[in-house]
Image 1 (cartoon, rainbow, N blue to C red):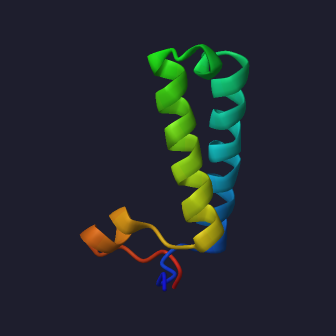
Image 2 (image 1 turned 180 degrees about the horizontal axis):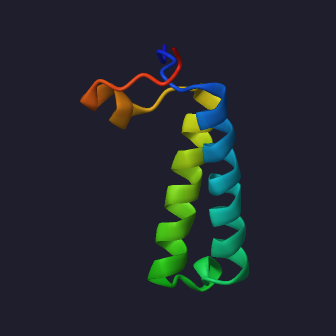
Length: 69
């Protein structure tokens, strides 16, 4: 379904950043109290974790990048 276009290093970096953003969103940015910065951080974190898990980035596909090679 998703064409892999991310290298293993790219996936690890995205996973670490995504997890860090989610932790920051819940711990410090106030996602639970509906603060805009917390919501944005949580959304970006979820997108990064999703792309890390699937190995496919829509933005890479749109601009023609492929770091998996």
